[in-house]
Length: 161
Image (cartoon, rainbow, N blue to C red):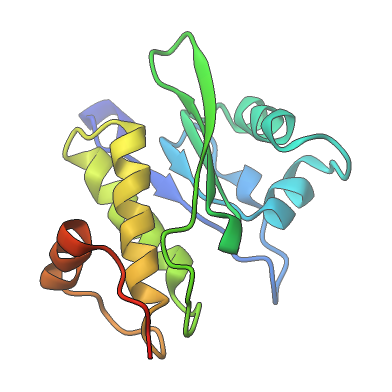
């Protein structure tokens, strides 16, 4: 029903303490698995990350796959023009994380909202990365406020004392 009304769909699955299968989300606009979650979903231990993302994309008929890679940033695998798949890495923006709780949730929420407002995947991934970098600069999984995102976009992440 959402697709029929032009609503963007984003999904994530948590597999660190439970068995989640990101591939159960078919036809979504954005999924954001970790490498481990992607490998579990396609039962693939050895292929490179681009091949892994492509297999996951094909298995679930997905538009954008963003592999979250902690301190190594993101791998964006996208069907930008519905014809030409592009893959590129966006580095982690916060080199001094305090607490990683909530980073993935912050990324997914912000990137999905950006896509819903017609940002392209690269803009959405960058904004999601900004949100994740703000989140990991705090202790605990606490809400991010707009002014924090604006501050980071204007001045970058400040090194914590």
